[in-house]
Length: 263
Ligand SMILES: Nc1ncnc2c1ncn2[C@@H]1O[C@H](COP(=O)(O)OP(=O)(O)OP(=O)(O)O)[C@@H](O)[C@H]1O
Ligand SMILES: [Mg+2]
Image: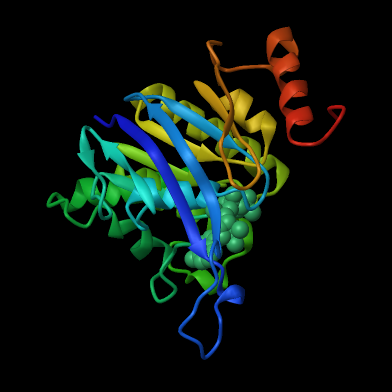
């Protein structure tokens, strides 16, 4: 189980350009505030999609939830425990490839399930996920031998094979062609319906968020705060065309993100 709480989370980085050179004295207010007092809660088994303008701190927030980075103040709790380092039960799908370049597709996917003692079962899991992302003939290829879309698919297979309690995905479909994007989105939704893990998805695609999420969150520009939070109590598979409320929300989010009429 994975119940996540974000309490008064703040993150700022030192603005390197404003550090006085060769002087002890440093400027005041030189920090760049990225996230400003974020309070959120993700229920066990919930899929939440997070939208926001580029550079607002979405990846930064995910990295803190995953324990890769420490907050400036406030904290993240998973099942009541403060996150201070990466956890074995959380897995992260990186915005840019997180595959190990010296390992083949098979070896990369195997990493997450290497603890399984039953070799037959382990091989079946690896092969199933590799087949699911349609990399069936590329098990022995290295990351540099794959296209951008294939890298994303291999990365998804690696994450899903682990069957983690918390799945943290930073733009998991970026770089995929349209059809693969649709197919992978469907797979993630099906997987979620089936195994109900707590899943956080950062995306730039408003339709992805509305089709996938149990809840959608829109962040403001920097210093970022939660601008909109909406529960999406619609069954799946979802079709935006048949839910006028979803179309309205879509327009509202487009407007919020600076596009005055939805395309
Ligand atoms: N290690 C760092 N040092 C200094 N500034 C950083 C660091 N990491 C991120 N930032 C700054 O924090 C801000 C938020 O970055 P982040 O990558 O979280 O944005 P994002 O919302 O994920 O953007 P995008 O949608 O483009 O991926 C940016 O202005 C970035 O320059
Ligand atoms: Mg990002």
